[in-house]
Structure formats: C-alpha cells, structure tokens
Image (cartoon, rainbow, N blue to C red; front, top):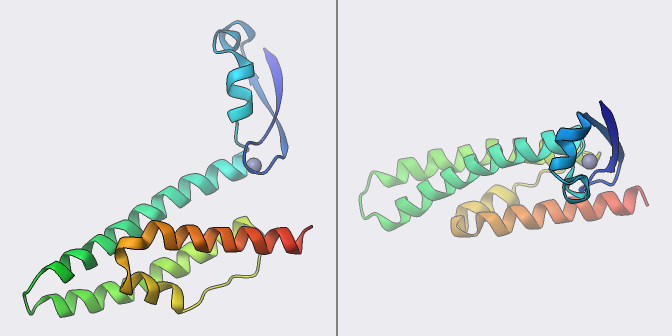
Amino acid sequence: MKTFDYNCKFCGNPGTVEGDEAGLHMFKPEVWLPKMACNRCGKYLEEKRRQMTDLFKACRVLQMCRASKSEKVKAIEEQTRDKLEILTKRFSTLVCDYYRLMNVWDREFPELLFEKPHAVEILAGVYIRGMAHEAKKAYA
Ligand SMILES: [Zn+2]
C-alpha cells in the first residue's frame, strides 16, 4: 500500500489517498491526483447535484404549465410555487453550510425561479457564486 498526498481540487485542503501502488500507477497519479476532491467537497457536490435535479424538475413543470392552455394548470403552478420555496430553502442550507455562512435565504430566490424557470441553472449559479464571494470576504 502506498499513500498519495493531494490537495482538494475545490477547497485546496490537503488530503491523502491510499492504494495499491502498482494499481494506482497504472492510472497515472499525476493525472488523477489534481482531480481529487476531499470528503467534504465530494459530499457537497453529490448533494448539490441531487438538489439541482429536483429544482430542474420543478422548473420543468412550470415551463410545461406555461405552455399549456388548460385551466387546471393554475393549481399545479401554485403547488410548484410552494415546492420551490421548500427546495430553495434546502438548497440555501446546503450551500451556506458548505461555505460556513449563516443561512441566507431570500424570498426573491424562489420567486425569480417562478418567474424565470428556464433560467434555473443561471439563478442557482448566481446564488452559489454570491455565497462563495461572501465566504471569501468573511474568511479572508
Ligand atoms: Zn475540498
């Protein structure tokens, strides 16, 4: 067994990974070591991916509602509005915990998604970058 040192690709924290030397060398450590993520970042990214899928689904429902002429969609839109509130609160908790910030959730976040469901990826990205920026200021 051999231990390899790495720095997390996302947060830069040092970590180590153990492996069978012969096996690991076949996969060229110089190639995969720079791509390693620490446990904390790995878990965050996995959970973020899961939550983004839920946000995408809710926004897709809204887009379908808006494309429909049926009267029934009003009720579905309202349900989805409530759902977006829950989803964005969960998302804010995840992102703020990761950046070690006080939980920052603003009603504007779900409302923007409700108005612009096609922009879900951009809006979530803006939120994350905003929190990353706050964290940089707070812990500089
Ligand atoms: Zn990390």
